[in-house]
Length: 116
Image (cartoon, rainbow, N blue to C red):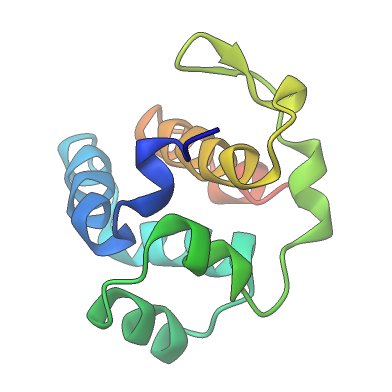
């Protein structure tokens, strides 16, 4: 079976859309970065390196230093699908990220977004 198109898209090509979505709602690039670092375990420097090397989503999540164990607490619907029901691991990681960015744009407090 062919890979889903999003797996081969570079994170760097989608990242500006995450930032724009957040900024339109009064949030910041710093908060977007914090969410990505929380989810993946990348440091700010490692995140920047992944963006600069144009890593695709599959590689980005495969190389993540420490996927946050609390990400299993992320629930809800993104793109019409419940994130907790997605069976393909990489797609689930991508949708977790999408859901967290949506929560940021909807004004949720960072403590709640980061499941503290």
